[in-house]
Length: 460
Image 1 (cartoon, rainbow, N blue to C red):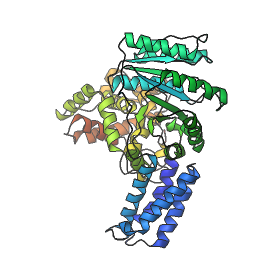
Image 2: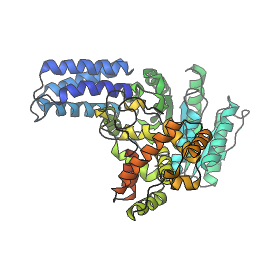
Image 3: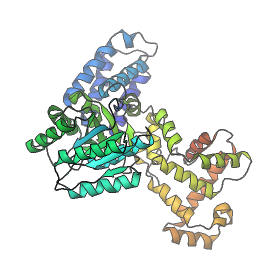
Image 4: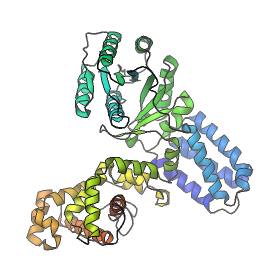
């Protein structure tokens, strides 16, 4: 997300960073580029106008002109204004009601509404330790009920059955009664979607909202629709008292216009963003962290939280102990590092959160392709345990067998062995904690030109 916007802003702000003095002329020139970058990112025009006016007022004032480093002061102003546009701070879900806390999820068909209910249920179960029940009030799409049931089984939450013959209000009332009996903390309600906003849909969802009076009414919207996402959210907000927005498919949105437009247009906070198809691919929306990512400053806090949650600590500690004892770093260990990285969302996700990404060549991070790491894993999987432990023993015939088994070329295998050697050298220098070992190990997969993609597209 924000790849295009980040690249454009990085170019603009780089020219200001080294300025000893900022004048009204060079600030206006920079703001022209920022305005163009925002519009190309499909940010809504009223949002762009308000953003530019506020940045200009602060930048031309004493706040920047009297700073020791005006270029950096200007970047600070841009970052703070981006944060303000997106909502200043994370907005937590409300639970201050008698259980179960009913949360209604609404949205257009195809926005990822049912999947978001599953993701949110998993989030509440794992992060907030809540007992969760889910129910589908979508009587127009039988597949939605089955889909939610399947998701509930996968993540281990309670599913309340419903059918297309029932009335939506009756479904939810019965689900709430059952949730009380089972001492559930939260009842998540999936509602019917349409291909577009229509009067019948709005009347039905209004009646449902009035009947169940949810503590949270969350609107799910597809980030890839750009500023249309904000306009659709506003249409729903005019009909329903929304409490927040879940922005989906942000991993496929290189522009980021929706994230920058929704709060300004609807007045409602973005509470979560969906970063992939898996049920764990849901993140709270932190405006200040997102602003840092847009400006290439990284998001180290989210990266650390991901590592704490998704890294297998036992394996990481085992590897750290092995290295500290002076034992070798073999291909079995290399494969585990690849799997740990995959659990954290892949290299593209890690790079997005690493500080200093704004210093890479424009578009470099976007060229990172996680398929190369999957190919590495396939090559290692085609080896015998002895070959993984002693890769120096690989001769020509063994290499050919491994390549046939993994569907790769000899040069791919040789490149993997070379990168493994680089990691071995790095691992010998490590004597820190398990997490640092893992993170530095990831860095060892860089080629001579930096991270894959930094000096051109990966050759795998």
